[in-house]
Length: 121
Ligand code: HEM
Image (cartoon, rainbow, N blue to C red):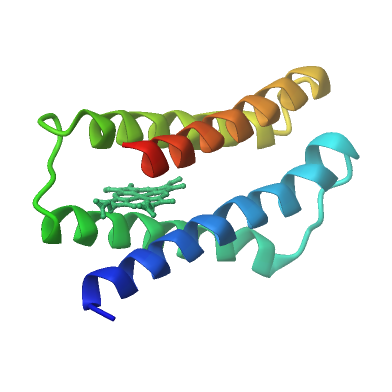
């Protein structure tokens, strides 16, 4: 297997872990209104998401596909920022519970959109 394919597998795995950790934090916090106050659960998503971003950047350089020429990549990066902002807003304790749920579902939908773009570009 080429280094590129290997890194792409790593990238996809990091993406799956990212959404897994997001759901694992989001269901107790947003749906049950009882956050899991586990230290590792606050730190792990940041490490994972940094690696996800880095792996994406390396794939971008190795495959020489750059925004804005590659529209799918541009849209993916914009949606990544939207996903992060929705997540921050959804997990904010001062956001009303009803709005937290709406923002959480929107973040999940945006993540699904990012995956759809990656698979169909
Ligand atoms: C939530 C964040 C992300 C998700 C869910 C995601 C998902 C994916 C998936 C599923 C693939 C594999 C597509 C395939 O099998 O052909 C992929 C490939 C790729 N991703 Fe991401 N990604 C994310 C973030 C990023 C970021 C931030 C970048 C760039 C900075 C990036 C750049 C790339 C590149 C260049 C490829 C390889 C495309 C190719 O081989 O032509 N990704 N991504």
